[in-house]
Amino acid sequence: MGRVALGEFELLVLLACLRLGADEAYAVSIVDEIRGRTGRDIHRAAVYVTLQRLERKALITTRLGPPLPERGGKARRLVQVERAGREAVRGARHALQQMWVGLGPRLEER
Image (tube, rainbow, N blue to C red):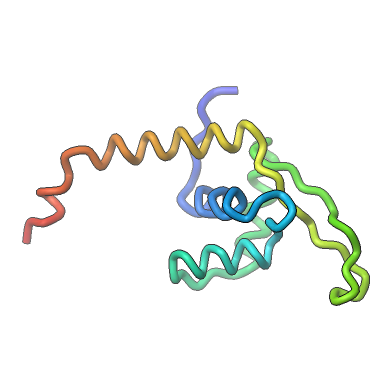
C-alpha cells in the first residue's frame, strides 16, 4: 500500500484514537478527546462517517466491546488503529513538520 493522504479531520480522529487506546476509543470518547484538546465543536455523526472511511482505507479496525448496563445492554464499537494507520499518522506528521521549516519569521510578519 502506498502513502495514504489524510484529511485534517481524519488525522484528528486517528490521533484521538491513538491517545485513547483500543479499549477506550469509541465515537463519544473520540468526540470528547478532540473537543477537549482543540476546542472544536464537532458532531458525533462526523466521527462515525470518518471512522467508516478510515476502516475502508484499512487504517483502523472496529469491534464490539462488552455489553454495558448503562447503555441498556448495548456494546460500544471500539476502534483499533492498525499499522497502516500509525504509518499514515507518522507520514502526516513528517509532511507537516517539513512544511513548517523556516516559516517562523513569516508567521510573525504583520
